[in-house]
Image (cartoon, rainbow, N blue to C red; front, top):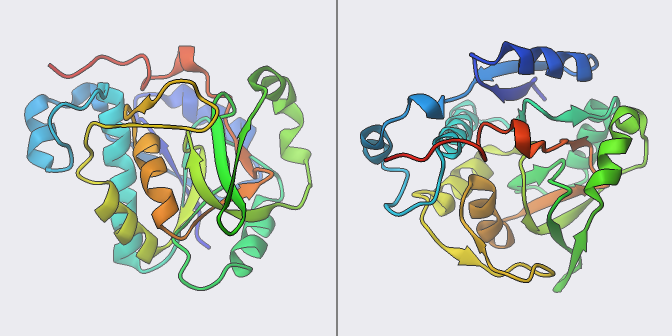
Length: 244
């Protein structure tokens, strides 16, 4: 498996430095993210990857374009690609645990999510046809961040239904082609989510992915091998401006 491709804006060196401090054990390279702040409505329309009417910030458009570019790279290289966001924190044994988990999957797997946002819902299938939804304690997660890299519980792969956030994942070439075709062009929609009282609107790529996970051979590692503090106050996506 090659290095982790870390999506990061070239203009945010402080985030890159923080990632390096948190993950000294990781083999990674930075991938210059598409800067949503520099996007125009005309450029977004010309890409052909977005339907009109999306409730996306500029940052959300940039994130979607960045992930799409890496999926295209996986297809072109013909090899699985591991992708992360620049606030992700990985376990020290990530490389070994990742290799073991992937080796145990049936051929033809599409995507494996290594972590998710703890301030929302994770839905997976513990048995064929038996979904389960879980909620988590975000405050407890934040308190546990310093010790997370040293945890060693053996993860298992469960079929994935719904997850929010994309702190880290590995996607196969076939999965990249399939998932891109089913996600894009991104469109406005709402979806019902177990436990949550209100439908969730598509305001980012992770929501679009949650609509297609069940129809693909996608998995989630439980417990996670990567987590994110998901600091909304520092997010350039959630706090970004909208295209006009």
